[in-house]
Amino acid sequence: MLRITFCVRQDMNAASRFERKVRSSEATCRPGFKDLRSYLNRLKYPKKVGASGAIPSLAAIILNSLHTIPILIWSQLTHVLSGFRLSSSRMRVMVLTRVLRKLFPSLAEAAATLRFRTYMEDGLITRHAADFLKDKRFLSAYAIGKATGSWKNMNPRWRVYTACWAASHAVTLPGDFVECGVNRGGMALTIMEYLNFNIFEKRFFLLDTYTGFPEGLQTAAANQGQYSNCYHDVVKTFMPYRGARIVKGVVPDTLSMIDADQLAFLSIDMNAAEPEVAAVRQLWPRLVAGAVVLLDDYGGGPSYMLQKNAFDALAQELGFTILCLPTGQGLIIKA
Ligand SMILES: C[S@@+](CC[C@H](N)C(=O)[O-])C[C@H]1O[C@@H](n2cnc3c(N)ncnc32)[C@H](O)[C@@H]1O
Image 1 (cartoon, rainbow, N blue to C red):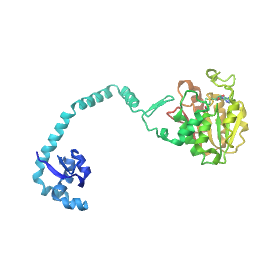
Image 2: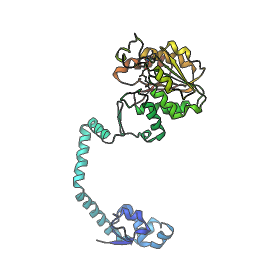
Image 3: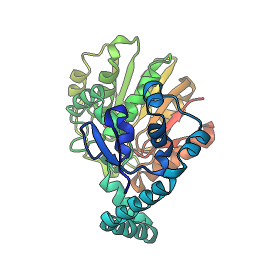
Image 4: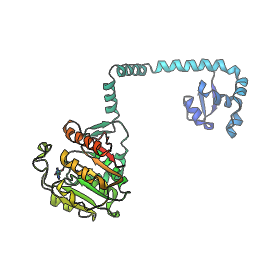
């Protein structure tokens, strides 16, 4: 076995490819084909390569190094074979994993997603990047929104982050903000904290009965008794925000209280198709180009199909498209 000694300090990268055996000044290595050029450079042109980094032509290298080629082939072969021996148990696991993946692709996908998950709450499990969970500005705004008690034991962080992202876009446009379905103000307060809303000359209209669902709505039955009277708490919560406008009453009756000519952001979260569709239909003409409409329950699953179907019909009627997000929200950008 040919042993080649060279100075590790000259090229740490090459040394690590050659098995990183020692940290001191000398290393023993078996070069591979991938490293042929740099290895031969070192062997034949140590000064030139070390000093200036210049690489001689490949033809010159081969001509000057023909005698080393058979040895290199042999060393590469033994290297590969010893690798097989060393990692045979790992190889078995790899092969088994591949077979299982072929046989049960959905199970394998679920197992991989669970294993590498970055997010698992609010009906969403994923291994995709969830960098907003490290965004200090968002986390602190979210904690303030959560403290309102709007979401009880739920943690809809991705949904709320999506709303913050959409609001940061909308705040650059002319027009005010509206939320229909505020409850104790969790979502709206997080947005206002996140954007530091007081620095903008904008109003945020906050529409809710503040006593829960009105009687007689088709989708309201399951939600009856879920929300208590919170009007006074909400007034206190939004006191620090001069742009906040709390509008108490039943949507769509109260939509006339929105005395803004232009709107940039509309958040819809009333868990009921009729007032939600009525709000978007009535406010649509006032939404500026690029304005965002966020439908909290659009893709929320079987319990929310009434809302989904109603909005799909409205999209046809008004000529917009709805992006169904993995969070369950629907996102509309006004053209
Ligand atoms: C899911 S909660 C809203 C959650 C809120 N976006 C948050 O961040 O916590 C639904 C709210 O819609 C309100 N609501 C339902 N139907 C309404 C209607 N027709 N008019 C006004 N408010 C309504 C309820 O009172 C309730 O507070």
